[in-house]
Length: 124
Image (cartoon, rainbow, N blue to C red):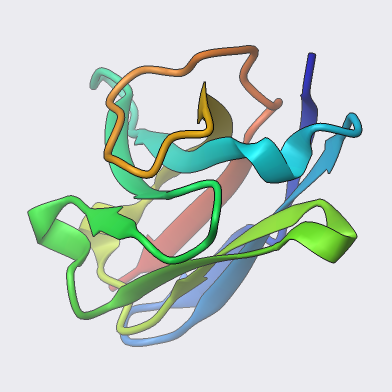
């Protein structure tokens, strides 16, 4: 079982940048696909980005393509989400979650427990 702790959220002006981190416990982190999801007030949680277990294949929802970059450092058991050119509509609580083991495709639902989330607020 992989346990996750997100960090790096905060308040930023439109056009700014933030880097989210998701630290994982568990010796098998490197074998899992990982993803970022977000939930805005009054809306359902949605997929943002995912990365395959090998760190090569990445997927993004259309609204963040070209602005967000997902990456992972398996030596540090950490997955990152670099967010540039932030918009007010990116305001949400951001969560990371594990995907299937030994998987390199996109996944739209977690295959394990959510982290506690980190708040990202983008002011206009």
